[in-house]
Length: 151
Image (cartoon, rainbow, N blue to C red; front, side, top):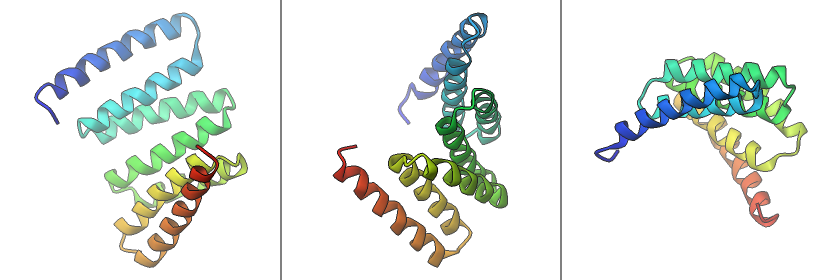
């Protein structure tokens, strides 16, 4: 990270907090979910995975309320990813499987590829190398489909 990275992250967090106030005042739930996702990423950049998970859960809850399938799948994948770093491997696996169940039905190859790559990381982290390799191959196949379709 550069010299001013944490200063920029702190400023970004402040801007996100202001956006939350405006979004809540305007009852803009979708934008609020996006801001929570951004706040989670800011926490990840600082190594605060516990707080990141809290923000991802807030975004997830809103997306469930809005019945936003792609957003639900995306947040489950994000939760799976952050759970790897928290050492919550069983929870991570459940989140990745639930995410894949949703997004594969949406035929979202790009998000499926990204989720599979992170699921492969989980399998690698727990030393299940054969399963990791199989999942990574599937992710690469999906990514190739995205490239061929121009995504």
